[in-house]
Length: 44
View 1 (cartoon, rainbow, N blue to C red):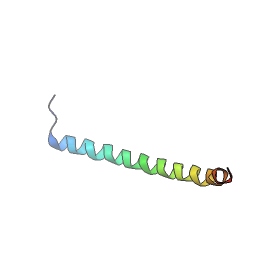
View 2: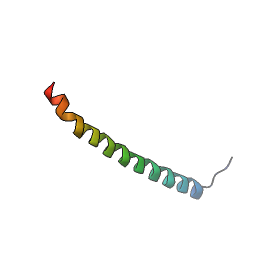
View 3: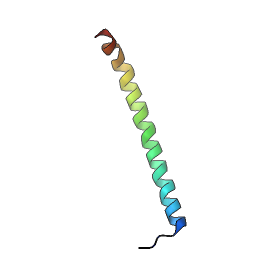
């Protein structure tokens, strides 16, 4: 199955874009949980 470099580049670009967006969402989500649960950890 031959894929042209241009198509491969487009696929990489879209894949990377999706990964970055997901990474941002995960980071914000983790930071929010960390911020809300950190005082509980600190009390222990």
